[in-house]
Length: 132
Image (cartoon, rainbow, N blue to C red; front, side):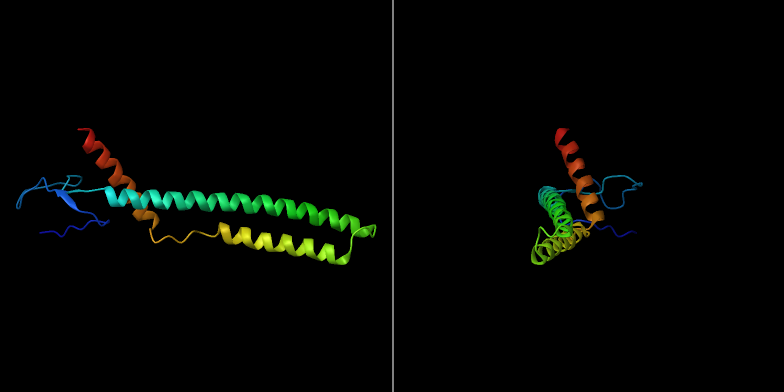
C-alpha cells in the first residue's frame, strides 16, 4: 500500500488505474486539470519579466547618474560645479545602486522553483494528452 499526493492543487479529471492494479514508476496514476496551474505559471512568468524590465531600467538610470556624477567630480576640480550639485549627483547614484541591488535580489514568489517546474511538467503532459 502506498500514499500518492500531487504537488499542485488541481482537479482530478481521470484515474486510469483500478484498485489492486500493479503499477511501476512512471505510470500515470491520475490526470489533473492543468488550467489553474498553467495560469499560475503564466502569472509567475509575467512577474519575472516585469522584474527583469525594472532591473534593466534601474541599471540604465544608474549608468546615467554615474556619468553625471563623474562629470561633476571633474568639473568640481575646476570649480565649475557647486558642492551641492556634486553631493546631489553622488546621492542619486548611491540611491540607484541600492535600488538596483534591491531589484536584483531573488524574487520571493509564493510559487517555489520546484513548484514552477512541476507546473511546466504538468502543462506539457496536458498538452500531449490533448494532442492524442
